[in-house]
Image (cartoon, rainbow, N blue to C red):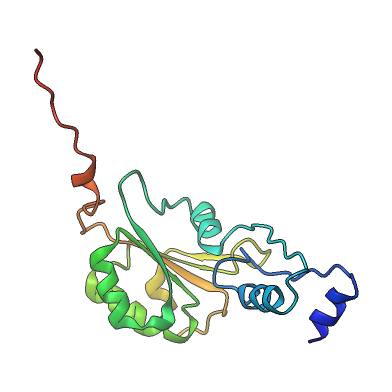
Length: 173
């Protein structure tokens, strides 16, 4: 209500987020409420860099090439969902891994994906930390702002779309 009152007074307000305001941010809820309750107030969203894109750049890992697929989910979906998604996507980005880190590490060990995973904490900040030996994180307390990039080399890369991109030979006349 305080935000709405200030906006209706004609004041400009800024809602800062870490990363991108349209990706897993509370800004979306705030913007929706302001648009509903004060449709005359202009809400402008300035794009930022999402944590997973920043993490890929910081580590030199590719999220997806040409026909490959990737998914971005909060780790809170649980290891059963993560396990299923590993069969469906070439790369999986797991956000906010702190509460389930040990369970996720155990899953990655069972699937043989520890070596192709990378942990990034506080990406883009002076306290950024990249851990490539993710097994070493077992039992460690990590920051809330952490994620895992998991590449699944055992999956046939890009298999979901390859059939759509086949070129058919045309016989000459």
